Image (cartoon, rainbow, N blue to C red; front, side, top):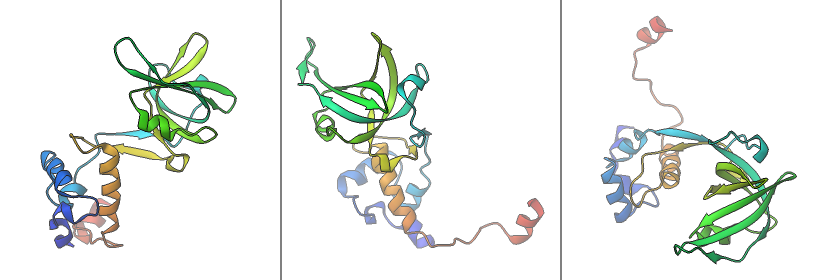
Length: 184
């Protein structure tokens, strides 16, 4: 077991030299270091809300179906604005992305997505700007890890899952049985 904790993080699938360098910036050198990299917070994607029920000024998760996509437009400042119209059940929702063509391309008309961000009511309609996007199958609580250039929280979450799969089914408790019984 201790040998697993001492294995270099590069032994995990998906960790090459670049990610190894990024992990070093976070103080992660081994699989054990990774398993001890704790989330700084969590995002609850498990209970999507309707735009009308979104808490004011706070991020939340909304499940919406893409209805249509508008042609990209450039702002005066040179930002590429990408807009989609969506519906969360019967409530219309506008999605606004900034320079995120890869994400805009993923938002397929007719498909449902989970959107995480702050919902604003503007001009009698609901809008979510620059949301994080996941598939409905990923509706759960997601950990948010410390990040660095080249390592997003989503990548760390995926690698953490791979590391956890390497653990044995049962792990010996380091506390002696007498202490566990005493402390219940």
